[in-house]
Image 1 (cartoon, rainbow, N blue to C red):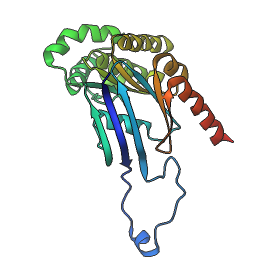
Image 2 (cartoon, rainbow, N blue to C red):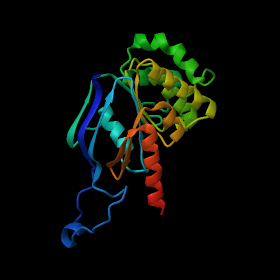
Image 3 (cartoon, one colour):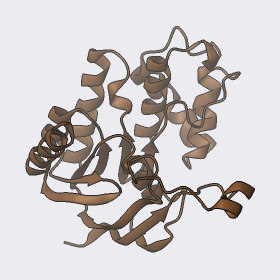
Image 4 (cartoon, rainbow, N blue to C red):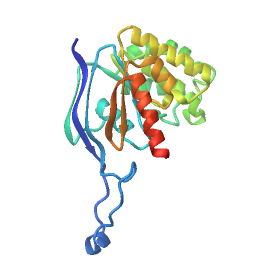
Length: 246
């Protein structure tokens, strides 16, 4: 089976600010590298994903998980290495990304759908279904600035799943909102996978990853700590956290 996504020895550097006058005169102070001060966001990341396979990404905060999703989506480019994708990608990487606070929920559906590559005809055809899935019928004509984080997530997720994407990138957004809607989203993702869709999910919800994902990757300090079956990745991640706490 051919690989739908391939990440080959990818490196991504942080855009640190240039040296100031003081640094040039007395030398830049050395700071011990940690998750928030290292020079490289990601170092030598490699993996392959086949069509219909779901992959979970875990790791401590600030370790490069969201950066990796942005690289896969193509919103940023690697400094070294290569990423190839042989499919259309839909994503929900940041709460409220693509929405305008002064526009209504309905207007933002059209805006966000156009950003995701849907035509006006496609959006009109799917509009009622998008609103119905979001369960925001009573608030759909109110400005987005009046929405809670959970409502924004509902609307964003609903638009994304109505695109014709072969791959979905999901970043932590399933943790926002009430449990019933989270369950509804997870059920959709499971159905998407059964239809041979490909999922890449960043989450701290280990049970969700265990239920949905076939394979996984654990990242620490921008490097691959372990990759393999999702259940084994979760075990290694637990060991990593215990090591950091000790």
